[in-house]
Amino acid sequence: MMSTGLIFGTISALFGLSHGIITPEQYSHLVATVIGSAVIPTLIANAYFMPRHLRPTDVGDTEAMSEVRVHR
Image (cartoon, rainbow, N blue to C red; front, side, top):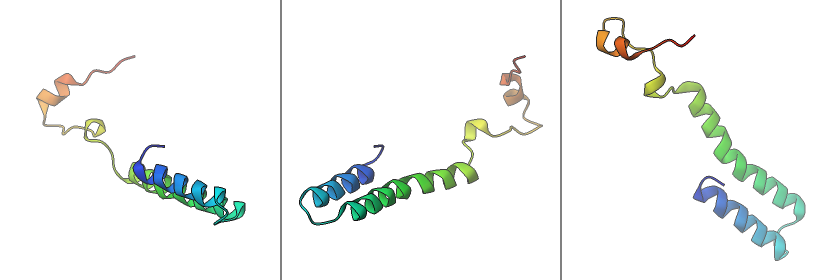
């Protein structure tokens, strides 16, 4: 569990299941939705945004190019 939303969502779904408020089928759907609400935005962010330290440097930037080393 990586965030408060995941923790709160799964605990509240488990509370509902253990107190008979929701059925096991509803519990499964709720937990899948909670997990999906964290995983899907992460996948989208990873697909469209690259961290600054992984971006290619400008050709004219000789200082930055001198720091880049190619390992073979």
